[in-house]
Length: 138
Figure (tube, rainbow, N blue to C red):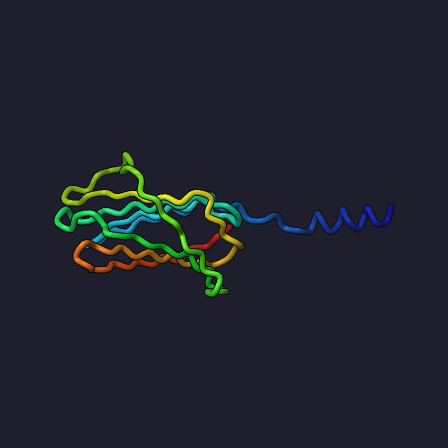
């Protein structure tokens, strides 16, 4: 009976894990607009979606790469295998073409501060790199 009371006392003082909220980050720029979505934004499997808008005169991206890096342990970076998908039904940006990429069930190991970094290589060899810091599991 005493052990049961101790267990109950411990569980009543432990704070529950904070609820996670999906990442939905949008940034505008002259050479690139982008939206990054990570859902559910919790340790374990996550769906990653990257939408980019390039100026019409830049054409299609030649390649795209993404890595998600835990800031406490950069050596545990996760390379994201993005697959091209048809553009979404979001708001179009006049003068820009939309491209959409997704990765399903990307395994992210633990809660904490992370960094998403992606690189878009254009047909002329120009590279556009962007970073975004976010909290996984919060």
